[in-house]
Length: 496
Image (tube, rainbow, N blue to C red):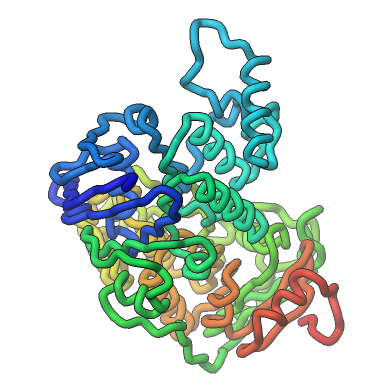
């Protein structure tokens, strides 16, 4: 056995992150680690990788007791971790990042570092160049550099924490290929993911954590998807989230021939009250760019935006917010939340005028507003004073939504709202969207996961190369979406 951890506990103040974390990994296997956000997966792996210390429990590495005070201790015995968010130095080259921290002596022989990196890249068939600056790499490219670092250190256990959450299908396939090659070489792999469709492609065995405890371990082939979900959430979930459509009301948002050179080309669409319209398309199709233009982050070169039938002059996000438009961005930690601030301030930051008197914050009003929307969205937290950055991904997303609900927004732009959150939290986000629609909001949702689009959309608008290639009704198929997203140009038959 390569790794054995038994009965691991870990507390952060009064919060118990792990109460009985148990995991065994064999050489040459891909071991899936599953669980809802906050189940303890990342905490357990950070303990294994030497980033945190366990309070109690047994840790065996190759059959012998082990304890790591820092990541360098774990790396020294052959354990490395590839994080969801890159920890590389962007101003350095691929080669320099691979060998960063392991230079010998005062002077660095850059030619020697480049040669070693090129040899390593060639041996593992990675689509990289040693001299490339990391700042220009895609998220997948950065993860490959981290894998190179692990391989160059002679790692025998590699931990992936949500490696494909921000990758395209092609980039995901490349990561899968490399994981399979590492497995074939006898390396053990622990793979954390929320994407149910990835599991069968790559996993051998699976361990499920729930509320800090290991509740199941066994071969993946012996579990149905429904059984796996039940282990994760402790209850039955429908195989698919089902949303009953509502009768749409008046038109709340209309954009006509909106262009942002060179990203968007004369995009036109409308959304009515009570509708959830989903944007589909491949990476680079222009979906996020459309949301940014509607919200005033990017200035349109031409075209018009109307809100509730009246022209809206949106030249900045401030103008969009005044018009009742809200953006829930893809990268919630960088552009949706202030992670160092408490939940309460994140909820009220866009509506300070409603919780202030004479220019001073009214703590009672703030408390009432925060309580109303955190309860409504079922945000799981110790208190409103907890830092937003310490919440799980799903609860962070709820706080972002709460911020705009508190502001009284009626038009919501959701950009990849379920990225990096588990199946239970996804269902809760969909329920929030459905509630918003039933209360008369208009919703535009971007998602790269086709099953999600089919579950929640009233209409699906497909984009390709900055243009709308077609519009599909509720009940369409994944094949029809992909045909418009990848192959078909704008046609009179399908264009809105």
